[in-house]
Length: 76
Length: 204
Image (cartoon, rainbow over all chains, first blue to last red; front, side, top):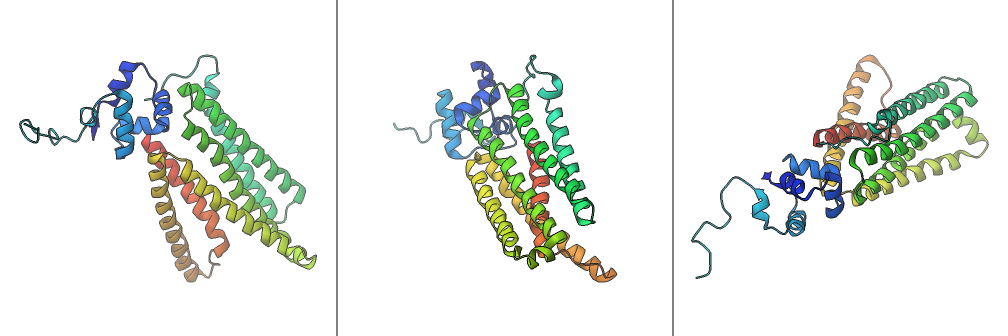
């Protein structure tokens, strides 16, 4: 799964180790997430989203399009 | 991606080269002590080599933390926990092998002296400790490392089974001795260590 974690981390000026410290995971896990070798669990994905203040779907992209297609599911 | 090593530390240490040399020297000393003890060499030399291997593993554990700090600037809590527990895990494995080697060499004499049960208790205690530390290790790891450990455990179990059965087939053919059940645990631990290292390198 693709994600914007590396760019978002770079914007904040954090090292992989510093981000790992904030998320309580190892630097290795951050590296695996950034390179797409590992997909996070839902709890970790939520922690990442909260840390960066962005919705999960703007950080992670499964390549299948928007979670809620435009015009669908939105309350009228 | 890895960050640049700190300038204040010599590259020999900051890149982990010194730590790797300590570890390889420790493995070498340990194997040497096993040979000396098993094939009737000097007991003092074997004990000296065994203690040297333990000291070298201690130095490796220390250098591993130094190199990680130099590379990353900081070590996250899960990594620090792992860095402290893994050497204890290896130490227990070495102790188990050490106790079993003592049994191979002086087992009969110790049994006569009534110390056989002490050795048996020590083996059982070390084995139980190793399992307890393994559980602690799994609990201390973050989710990705934990998943990696589970995969490494499965690979090590399969690998150990394969080696033992394959060797049994060969042994039956050529009349060589089979692998005693006691040595399946160290074999599993070594295969696990190799599998975990390979997976760890793959994850970056």
